[in-house]
Length: 460
Image (tube, rainbow, N blue to C red; front, top):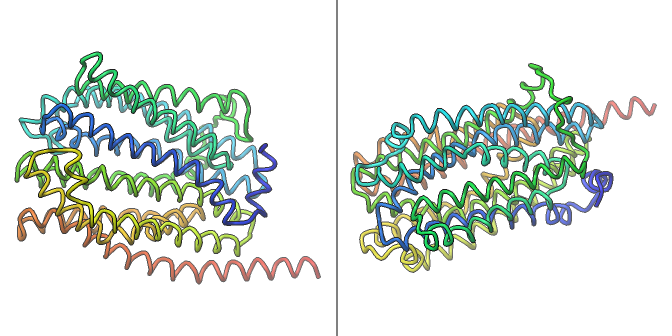
């Protein structure tokens, strides 16, 4: 499908078919990455070292922080690009894309250098105990040192996907994830690099994936161009990127901070609790990343049609995506509730880790059924350029609710306070989501009516 066919598909194609076509590659790619995270933990578990699993758990929020920077530029630019392409403003879309890409390079280099210099402080901040620190230093120094590749992957993936080329974007993500899975045993066991091998496998795979994404622009396979001549240091361009990018960054940053708070709270109860919660989070990413992939397919449809003033298609795409994502969440929640002990046992033979992980996974699963609706709503606000709503919703789940609950509940409930915090935060976030959707549905209806009136006046 060429670039002109992609634009026509977004404008007038069947919503269900388009959503499946755009989301399927993203879902496969995101699920593959989630599967890599699970397999990576399984390989580290083969080292028979609870502290090693704990080290990977401590680095997980740092990994999310790195991703948040790339997503800030990628999703922020992607939302603006979709709307500009829908409105027929291709050159403006090019300037947005180039601004996001080259700024991400600069920020990525700065982050890598300062992060490695301050690695010990970073690890302490995110909950590393003395018994975990040695392994975390080895793993973390490599991951942070090569973090620029992860940031650029997140940025370019969303730019490519914004013009409807999700198949290419999906292949790039799958390439990186599959290489990770293949390189892990080679580096860790064949080359006897241990936990350092897991980190080098990640960086190597991300570098290759990044080169594949750049090929899309070098070969001029799409509409968007990111050559240096398109980069314009403009406050207007940055404002457009950050309007949606900052809420995305805030959401990811708060997720990272909340995991750091979780690790610190868990450290008071021992390395077994840190390891157990790390395993639970890896399992949850299997469904969360699946839902993220579905949302990535939804975003260009909603953004393009909103820019083209096709409001009925915007609403229909939201309804279908919310139903599909919620159905998946209900199914996976049931699987986790029933098979929790066996799933935790795959990662650790430590009886304490198994008991804690089983309890946590079951409680988290109880409100996982709400996540599909939450995520679709957040993507909806991003796609429409509703920066304030997207920012508030981004802050609610992890910032306004989860972090305070993690700080308060363990003091009253002990370890159970850690387990109960996320489900309670999810329930509160759903209430906020419903309120924001109700308010903005009225605004969207008024905007549509105004547009219809203008068109009728022009015809008359």
